[in-house]
Figure 1: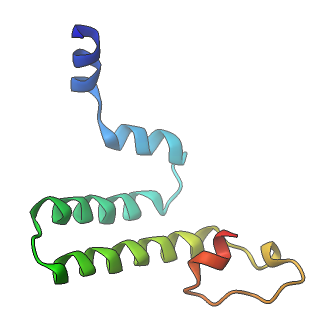
Figure 2: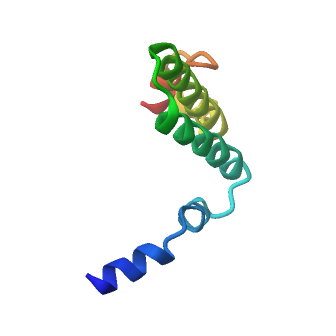
Length: 90
């Protein structure tokens, strides 16, 4: 347990994100937005607040998909719309 506690105390989520994103330029922006959403999750109480969190998460996914997606990924299929995360993820 002591070993687990000491490793937990040293854990920094930003170091983890930095390591897995390989310094991709968009990662810090998205991570900052995710951190603000995480704060809202802990403090919000009203339905409208949680709907706002959902909208923010959707916007983060759209920005990520627009950064990663290239038109060649669709192949011969029709190109997905700019805000169509679902089809870009396919």
